[in-house]
Amino acid sequence: MSVPAAIDVKAFIDDRPPSAYQWLLVILCFLVVAADGMDVAIMGFVAPPILQEWGLSRPAFGLVMSAAPIGLVIGALVAGPSSDRVGRKLVLIASVLLFGVLTIATAFSRSPTEMAALRLLTGIGLGAAMPNTTTLLSEYAPSGKRALMITIMFTGFNLGSALIGFVAGALIPMHGWRSVLVFGGVLPLVLVPLLVCLLPESARLMAVKGRPAERIAATLGRVCGVRFEPGTRFFSQEPQVAGRTSVGVLFSPGFSALTIALWVTYFMGLLVIYLLTGWLPTLMKDAGLSIATAANVTAMFQIGGTIGAVIVGWCMDRTQPARVIAGAYFAGALCVLLVGAIGALSPALTLLVFSTGFFMSGAQTGLNAFAPGCYPTAARATGVSWMLGMGRFGSILGSAFGGALLGMGLGFGSILGMLAVPAAFAAVAILSTRRRDAVRGREAAAV
Image 1 (cartoon, rainbow, N blue to C red):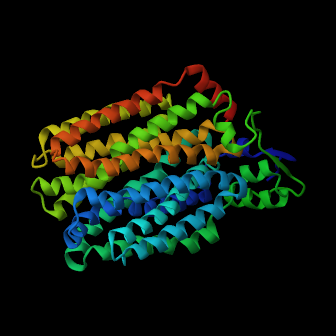
Image 2 (image 1 turned 90 degrees about the vertical axis):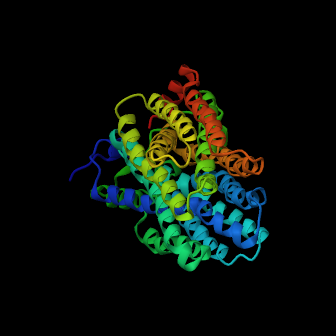
Image 3 (image 1 turned 30 degrees about the vertical axis):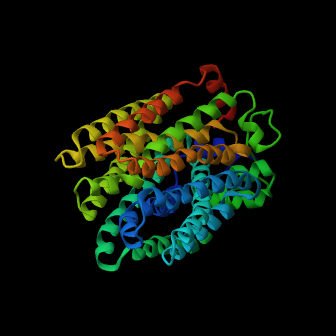
């Protein structure tokens, strides 16, 4: 196949249908995100038996629950600039190895303090993995299918969270809570050799960094199924930005208001999702359901989110993505209100928890697909990871706030009713960016 002597990597990818290798990349990133989802959600499912075995109060266990989200913030803030500097592949593989090993180590914790420390370190690995899968896939996905491919990848997070719920329901009665943590740590370690062998580096980043053309040709040709002629040059058409560093780009003209809107939206969405996934099993157990039933019902939140993510991504590729995301957040707020109103013993609980996950996780996943297109290649991982990092303060607050509310004696309906407020605020925030700033930033990114 004859190709031009100089190739714009982005335009080359956008002008071709996805190859088999690009779909393989979706699968690899899907598996990483699934392992991430399992380890992020795992403490919510093992919390009830740990509380019982160690004789802890719920507020006291809030330290353990909030440790991993703190690590997620650290990992995200460090991983983005590191990835923009040294490459997506190396940072991603190191992060998967880290959180796999430390999740297994957490199974052998002997005290809440030790467990909190291990969860903090685990969170650093988890925080570094998510933005790099998002960024890498966004740089290989053609523009017409980008949101769909990224949201398909992110269904791995929901399915991983759901899987660990079903695993917890099966393993805890027979083998105890430690077996669930071992299971959650082994799976990411199995992925590491596959990532080393099959994961490509970003051709767009290599072009921006001026890497040898032969290396770019080999990587891009492998992914797209093309053989390039000797001497082919590669470039990435990038906008002129005011920031000298990748972090500075986030607050340069055309990006600043959009950056703040993404942070606020992600914060509010994660506050709701983490409080639900972290404390919903305990809330339902207190309301009279068994641990196994509570775990299975909570898993329906993740299954709903899986389906919602794909539908939201499909809609985002066909209409204004911010409006799609906002609509899903508004619908999620309504579902949260209804879950609180009907109570934990209602026959409709499973359906409404499913619907809440459909809209809330669907919107949150859509936001992950939306963010990479807002920034240029040299700052893309930083933009995505700092959105995740700053937004993670919402997950920290949600995890700790849930324990505090339970300690105050608030019931199922009261806590769920409160969560409708941040869900609605997330919808408002994604729409609140000044239009000229958002449009200018997205056009400048040219992704």
